[in-house]
Length: 187
Ligand SMILES: C[S@@+](CC[C@H](N)C(=O)[O-])C[C@H]1O[C@@H](n2cnc3c(N)ncnc32)[C@H](O)[C@@H]1O
Image (cartoon, rainbow, N blue to C red):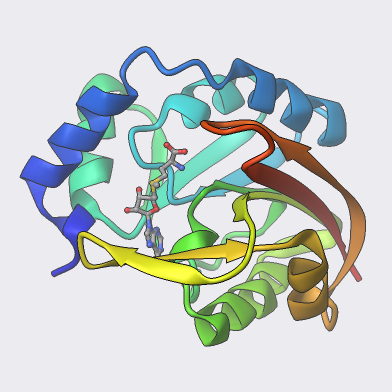
């Protein structure tokens, strides 16, 4: 059992995120990924982003934690949700876009590589992905979770067999320029 498989930890995270305003990042998503298409979100957590994304896209939310999915389903019983590991992405469904916000940071280098390979298999031709990461180098462990820092160059290199970089942008989540998003197009 991982940290987010425990209902108590999920409730703590949902409470911590309550009132968090992520609308600037979601505006960036809207600017890069035209509305009206299908989207899979990996690692939706409390579902704050998902609630905004589903207004513009035919969105499916997912997480590896059943506790997060159960919590979101209580708020929105008709939401399309899947229990998915972001590295394996075991579903038959195909999407125009894949989105994640500070989720792929939890994957080892091998799992991150597998994730990009599996994302490409779940995308339509010319499909786009939009992912956020903490900017930097190195990694640490907290609450038994792996947290990796990355650079856009590193992500472009890891995903290069399957994706062409469209753009990457630094932004601030907690400290100045501590984060970046990257948009990649399926080759
Ligand atoms: C830091 S939280 C971010 C949640 C949400 N994206 C947000 O921005 O608030 C990380 C999320 O990734 C999920 N997660 C971690 N490892 C995962 C994996 N291998 N596959 C799918 N989800 C994972 C966790 O359950 C949690 O919901």
